[in-house]
Picture 1 (cartoon, rainbow, N blue to C red):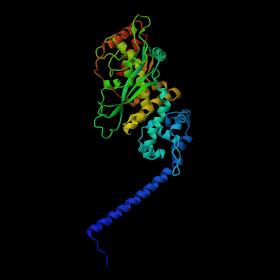
Picture 2: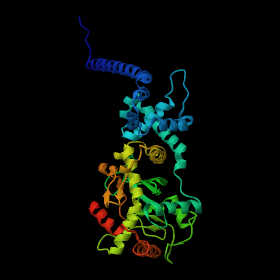
Picture 3: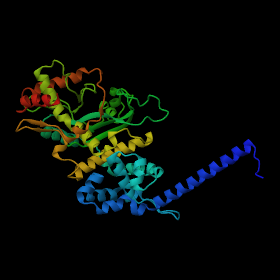
Length: 417
């Protein structure tokens, strides 16, 4: 005779069966995961890199093999872990490769776990740690001039390469789009309706970052972003060791060293920006052209950064406390590769004026779209800033004019329109 079970007993038996089935599935999954991860030595990127030719290697990691090896030796002491009795540690090479692939592709940790044969949990530790190691190893490449001589050399570079006298750096800020951090409300909500942090940077005449500030939340006013930086504090307190005002060549006009910005910034004694475009005179238009011509270095630096490190091409989904490491490492890598790698930057990478043939060609990165700019500010311009700008405008239209400006201002404006 079949045993008779109450309804409660039947439910209990059914639940027990389901639990046993789930446990069996988990055991099988854990077994598969263990087998998969045990194969890391044979399946990881190291073996792929060994068979790649030089061009494929560059495309894979955004650098050539010699540059990769140099970087590896710099970060190895900071990212090498000891093996344990239970398992073999992920090597320094694997850690660096996984991090560079994350920065170069923008793929999520979940996607990278298959190609790196490393668990999601471990990647979420490895990549931020390695980013900090990269930044620590390369942070000397991001250096604001700290002496009169260094500022003079910065000004000389801008004068020789971009024909803008007394410019020592170009500034800009971009929104780095992120997935909304939990529990933050509208803290990171920006004017474009997305969530972001702001990267503020100053760039030299050679497209290199000389100052970076990260972490300002996307909801902060754009004027407040500059004023929240250590750079601005030093600027207004005269702690940057900038030289006194200089006489412009061929005149008795004096102007101080200046940083060039766009309309997102307020006009100040040491910060220049263009005149508003609406109904402006020829003289103001010439000034705007000369300023924007020099300021392209920062636009192009940001553009190359985002085109080479595609982590910036979509919302970044990491813990907010790890975001600074990613941004700082990318900026430091940009400078390192700009100085070391011939393939990182080419003439077609950036905007180019062919003065002989009177042609303006935009950089390759513009085909991929730009990072989100700061919102145009309505902050009040200072009287002193207006006077400096007028002096430079007068100079660029008289003794400081260059032979190509009359024609190129029209060509550049037509291209942008």
